Length: 313
Image 1 (cartoon, helix red, strand yellow):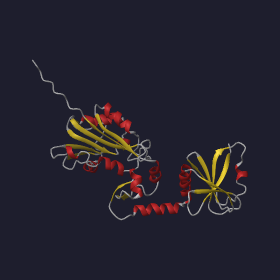
Image 2 (spheres, rainbow, N blue to C red):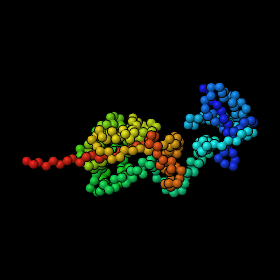
Image 3 (tube, rainbow, N blue to C red):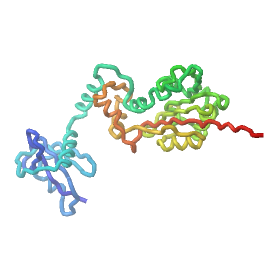
Image 4 (cartoon, rainbow, N blue to C red):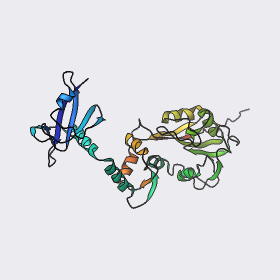
């Protein structure tokens, strides 16, 4: 399949207009291949241009060719607002990797407090202080695999913590009595379970008292990370199912992620804490959610209270 070709150059100063151009090349020019056309030939359509710096990329349903320089504006055309917004985004692709990295570095290096990295901010904001009202010195919590810090963040600052760290303890068979703890928590553990996740969740439900809570976080979109091994990925619905199959009532099951962060996750910036400034572009990126693209997911569920039946005999 070949494509009909239109060449556009942005007017200057910025006026919201774009110009159809052809002839000898000047910089910058974008060739927008907008629609299939069986009678067109891409080489013929672009033969009047000098593709000294050709770069192809896919944008939505379009293909774009960044060409090297053309002079002569032959026709002036007004774009509708939607098309204009799309073209504005395309022009950003002309930034070099060095420039993009410098811009990201500047955003990361903004002075001020930095607490969470980009894939943890939204989830940690949602769970910070979650159990504060239920927290007390006479409560107990089982922390699975080094999750004490997460529990403190979730509001369990007074509750007594008992640690069950791998490999001394196995979440598939917790060595604690049933109905023993008020809380059971794990942070980014369930993807590493070498066994049945239903069994693991059921064990965390078993050890909490009626009226007690479990809270587990894990991931969906993430690279393989063996600590020591990596087995599973979960959606919020999957965590809800695990909770319900374990006899618990789901309080909240949610996730956070977006497609732009997935790209940032592949860079050296991923694990750096971002500024706590809501106007910082990294903070904005770290709080924007696309529900169909969850990176991190979490669930809070409660064990039902046992009904007391009084005898009438």
